[in-house]
Image 1: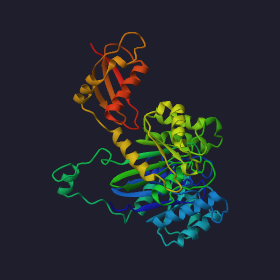
Image 2: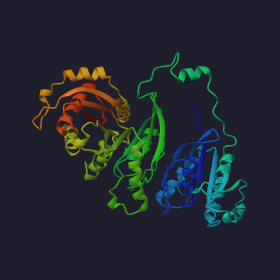
Image 3: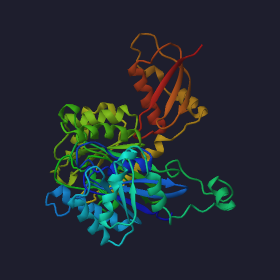
Image 4: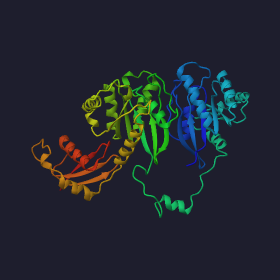
Amino acid sequence: MPQLPRVVILGRPNVGKSTLFNRICGRRRALVGDEPGMTRDRLYAPATWLGKPFEVVDTGGMIPFEKDLIPTEIIRQAHVAIEEAAQLILVVDARQGIVPLDEELVQLLRRTGKPLSLAVNKIDAAQHSPLAAEFHRLGVPDIFPLSAEHGLGVDDLLEHITEDFAAPAEKSEEQHAESAGGPGAAPLTPARDQTINVAIIGRPNVGKSTLLNSLLKEERSIVSPLPGTTRDAVDAQFERDGLRFRFIDTAGIRRKGKTKLMAEKLSVIQARKHLERADVALLMLDGPEGITALDTHIGGYAHESRRSVIIVVNKWDAVKRGPATTRDYIQILRERMKFLAYAPIVFISALTGQKLGDLLKTIAQVAEARRLRVSTSEMNQFLTEVDFERAPTPSGKPTRIYYLTQGGVAPPVFVAFTNRAGKLHFSFERFLENRIRERFGFLGTPIIVKPRQSH
């Protein structure tokens, strides 16, 4: 698949880069707020203008020659984005006028030789239009007054930057037949049929960004020893062994009561939203630190979201291991997170790359299990094989299941026609779920059982 042209949005902090990014890609992907420095990593999203597809990239607020770790990393990330760019957009704040940092950035971006457009933002009404005039002094020929928040003038900017972008070619009749599953089309397994969306979740500083970088073999996310470095989510796509993965590196989650900065509070909300975009959640734990109450809390978010879950124990190379260490760790983990009994556990080192191949295989297996559909005839054959005499009967009256059918996938939903009204007792439901897993697998995915009284 050919690489889409990339449009990179740059500028100093708090001029509206993320608002413009969200406006162009048509959805709220980047954090937006009044606190400077909300975006730190490069954020990528697909976009289309007049049938021309491209990729838009948001970058952190640039402060050249700043010596602090995070601003220095933001500059480095921006340089990587610029190298990949087909078009650059420098965003400035019309209401603040030209500031020395704008002039520095213009000089910096001119030296790249890339096509540069100037987006004069916060022209929210007609009376603000004259504010754009002074920006001609920066010497950038292509100037576009606009309001990213209200969408005013953004169409003129998009028309200019996409002028030389190609529209997708029409498919040939053979390609149409092939994509429709016609003659000669290769059968796809459920996991190969679509992109597997994976959210990396966990408390701050457990190695989420390091894992993403190791998988990508490039530094898409900023990695530093400072907790809470990642504030937003960073999407990254790649293919491995014929499978397409999209990883979402989410911000470290903290309990809301302990997040004082606006950005960190927003990150908690965003991380929970990103779970909803995922098929599979990687719950990352810090091996040397052990399992904390916050790890369990975050695992509860993943379980409640009904995503498939893999528990990833990171930094395992730093654990002093004896013959029983792994077994003991698993035992403690299963005891603390009984609600995630269905989640496989993978021990890795994101830093050294240890067991990352095993992790990708497990993700593929879990994604396939999430979409597995069992026929009604198979389900009812399975019912005849279950020894319901062993099933718990808390209320005294045995529960009978006359008929069982799968009503949905991702996650799998089963409808059980029974001899009683209302919900199944949790112990009976767990018994039935365990038997379904023993027979059909459903690795890593929650199973939902909906009872119906049979008349």
